[in-house]
Image 1 (cartoon, rainbow, N blue to C red):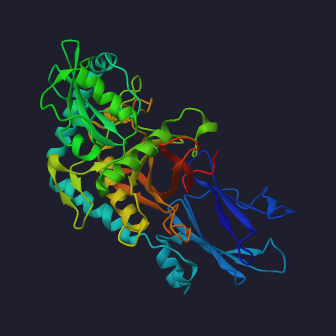
Image 2 (cartoon, rainbow, N blue to C red; image 1 turned 90 degrees about the vertical axis):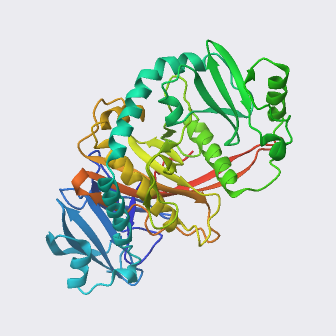
Length: 448
């Protein structure tokens, strides 16, 4: 991930900002031009790094870069001087508490440079913070979830070994199922992200309960409203039917989003970098040894304003993932349209991410950090969480203006870094099932 800084030619940056090992930014000036849009950037502009770098690029010959050093903002000016390097100088020292006030004092209109204010996003954080503070029951409930999940781990792992996945069927769990105190272990079988059956392991016996909507949606064998033996004729017919990749008989929107989520989960789960459309990302699964997909539950409902507290009936995070050592909260949509624009979607993801921040800073935070698959025992004192809107490519291929924007939650010592994932899906030659064929994202520059 890099940020380009230019003042006249958008195809050739005068400077670039690169993240360093401290999760801060170093700025490098162009040192050699090779032609064809390629250049070297070996000259480090400052001998110190920055918490945030916000380029205000313009092709008029005058650009600025807002720089956050030690939580104080300063301003760099770039002027065209008949060379690609541009002339630069620091025109505002690092004395400003926020970027907006610095630009206002300098009479610079950030809107002219496409600068996105983070006010509408910080308001989401504040709303969720207040909701969670006013409704404290979630803290003890999620602590009990975490404790029960840890206790049930070996039991669930052994239960999962009692059956094999059949073609096109994925095994899911949930926070409720994984933390249940029942001796019977229940798994959710899904076809293209849609639940089609429950599997129960009871006294080492595997039984299946087939969803009563399968016949309507997929033309499969009739519902049997009870648990039957996994090796029975009806169970075999069920598995055989879904191995043939039946199409769903309607286009329900929620089911379509589940299908997209499942495609992304399968793409992210690939182990070999050469096979992945986006490297350095893996989905968070329940219990690494068996890798159960699950949707992280929350006590809030942010899908439609106003955001509300919903207790045990709150919304679920579409995908939790780990990318380059950071936790990612990903909200998935099957369409890219004005009513569900990247900005609308990222706000929903910010709300869920704020809950995750509070959860990780709660008394059970270290348990959840480990459940999310991080080997480090305790949650880092300073934390960066990637917040992602995932959706199909827009018609104009425009990049969301919130990309790489950071929101700091000082009370929690957390920074939310906003990103997008655009994807395309298609069919491989000679195959019926769709897959993710292309990904473009601000998360990482390491594409296959």
